[in-house]
Structure formats: structure tokens, C-alpha cells
Image (cartoon, each protein chain N blue to C red):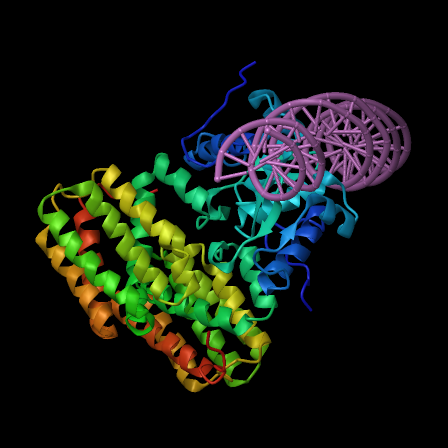
Length: 244
Length: 244
DNA sequence: CCCCACCATTGGTAACACCTTTCAGTGAGG
DNA sequence: CCTCACTGAAAGGTGTTACCAATGGTGGGG
């Protein structure tokens, strides 16, 4: 359940430190290792049967993600969520895989609502010709797949479309969110939150976004994307029992 | 043997691997070490006069930021900008310190335009009473400092206000951008992109945002913040937009 | 109450065995 | 003579162990 090989980086095989990192990262972000909890290198060596070098590298990586701090004599201390680097792909992955997944999905969706409309507007201005063409193609294919109710391939196209828009925006900070958005879209289906059993409304809005961007109408693209995401957020609302 | 020690003044405790990390990170993000360029652990040891352990830990950290990949036999390869983790605080810092600083400021500002209006709206709903009070205080102090033309302390308050709003939004993804926004605001003054005296318009808009959030009027807060940021973007325009 | 000594724990160095991947060299076949 | 497949050596990261240095929390002594 938790540690299904988080291949977040450029994927090489399972190096030793990566599996240890995955285990500890998951536990910290899941709250199993509570903030303030102390670790030691010896403890890590012992627990995972690895050498000091591997334990140290793992610890450095955890530290660079803000999950722990390491101080002499006192050891390694788990940090509270506030200091986690929540834009780190691995952190996002762990949190989506653990409990609090719906909380995470919710805040990520809010981020999407903030970013994607502007990204769509920028894409309408900046996209290359081939990107615009691909966008229109995608809209057509999505409609076909959506109406025939094939959810998985539909999701793939959905991911591709949003990624394309983010990349075409010409803003590297937007483009860097493609993985996040992909994770949200995939996580949403996995969680069974998949709101649109491709509702016609969503299909129409995707179509509208694609057309507007392709035609360079940035205002239309922005508002269409905004409405699309409002749809997404509303469809997600029902699963809200959790308040902190 | 050029054993150099590079401390780019980034404050934290000057541990050995950190200074090496800083040096290499800066060079890669600055483009001095071009994508595709090859490094070796031996080379790093030699150049910085550090042990293999330190070289390895540095390399792991660079890899976790997407700046390099490490493969057996082939060595360490510098990655193109597209795979950098541009939300990592250190990457942002390096890029703001190096060339392409204005490009970076521009894309970060666009990100602010996307996020901060929604953050303000959320803050209007979610902020605690003391946060609302502090916001009003800040607006008053900012006006005083702004009208007397004291740029540095004005900037500090500016940073505090935007940080407060992001944290008060209740969305961890927004809150995690406080460092980014702080870096942008500070970078903007350093770059001389700020008018020597805050324009009255900006002061009024800060005031308006503060009042709206404090009063819980989320729509007013959102539009006020949007106008504030539009002002920021326009004030920034004069610097030549460089296209890559 | 303050100061100092102790020692647990990370920080850093060194030397080593191992495994994977690349690449050059070699030979056979066309 | 050219091409291609095989082969083996070397390059370079991966992982292990042992050891010393620095540091800061803790507790004991004044």
C-alpha cells in the first residue's frame, strides 16, 4: 500500500538509499514518525541493515526536503509539516499515497484553480502552432473516449492536455507543475473521486479551452479553464468530512 | 590544485558539503556548467579538496534537485533546465543570484499573480482574529514608512504582509510559497526594480487588501490583490523582456 | 547557581571490494 | 576491404568498514 516504488526522479533502479528514503519519507509524511521524534544513524543502520554511508545519504536527502534536521550530539529530529518542502515531487507522492490524501488533493486542486487559468491564458499567447494543433486533436479524442465511457485512456488524455497547456504557457514555474497536476488527476481516479464519469459539461469545457487557446483568445481560454476547474472542485466537494 | 571554498553567503552553518553544493548548484543554474557536461566524484574531490563522502552527498543533493543525474560508469551529468526542481528554495536562490535573474523574477511574479489573489480570498475566510488584526496594523505601518520613503523597512513589512496572507489562507501549498514571495520582493528591491518611493496607489491597494481580508470580504480581497499585483507587474515591465 | 568535564552522536576522512556499463579490440563472414 | 557481433578490460559510481574530529547536552562538583 504505501511504498509502491515512487519513481519520481529520472528513473533508475532501486538503489539502496532510495528504498530507505522511501520508507522513512512515507512514515514521516504519514505521521507515523511524529514531529519531534528522534532518530539516529545507528538506528537507521540497524533497522534497514545498511551501512553508515547509506544511512547518512538518506538522512541528507530527508533533511534537504525539510522532513528532518540533523544536529550533532542530539541526532536526527523529525520536523513538523510546516517545514516540509511540499512542492518536492517525492513529498507529494508520499502524501498522496498515505493518509490525508484527500486533504492533499484538496489543496493541490486549489493550487490548480489558481494556476491553470493563467497558464491557459499564457498558452493562448505563447503556444506554437503544433501545440495548438495537438490541443484540438486532444479535445476531439477526449470527446470520443469520454462519450464511450472509457475512463482510463480518457484520464491519460486529460493529463496530456493539462500538461501541454502548462508547458505551452512559457512560464517555467507553471511548467514545473505538470507532475503535480498529473499526480492529482491520477490520484483522483484512484481515490474513486473521479467526479466526471465524463459528464458532457466537462467535455464541452475541455473543448472550449482547447479551441480558445488554439485561436489565441486568451481571455476566453482563461475563463473556460476557470469554469472547468470550478466544475472539478464542486464535483470533489462531497468527500469533505475532515476539518482541522 | 585549486582547492576552493565557496561560501555564497547563504547564511546557514557552513558545513563542508553545503559549500560545495552551493558552488556547484550556482554554476549549474547559472549555465557555467552547461547541460550535458560531465562530472566525476574524483573531479569534485580534487577540485574542492574534500573526501569522497562529501562529494557523494553533494552529488546526491544535486541529483535530488534534478540538476544532475548520476549513472554508473558514465559519471555525473548536468541536466537541462527543464528537469530542475524550480520550486526548491535553493534553486530559486541560486537563480536569483545568477544571470537570468530578471527572467526568474518575471516568471515568479506571474506565479504570484496566479496564487496570491486566491490566497487573499481564502485568508478572508480562514484567518484568525489576531491575524486579521496584525494585517490592519501592517497596513498602517506600511503607509507611514512608505510615505516617508524608507524603502528597506517598508520591504520588510511588505514581506510580512504577503507571508501572513499566504499562511492565513489555510492552504499548505500556498503557505509554502512564502519563501518564494519573500525572495521575489527582496530580489526586486535589490535589482532596483522598485520605485524609490512606493507609489500611493500601491499603498492604497495594500490598505484595501488588508481591510477586505480583515472584514472577511473575500471577493473584495481577491480583486484588490489582483489589482495590486497588476500594478507590480506593470511597474516591472520596463526591464527588457528577454526571450530565449 | 554557575562552570566544567564527559561522552553520545553527527561530521569528515581513508581505503577497499563490487557491480554495471561502456567501449575498444578482435575475429569471422561477406 | 568493410561490417558486425562478441568479448574483455577499464572506468566510475555503489556500498562497506574503520577511525578520528568536532560539538553540544547532561550531570556532577564547586
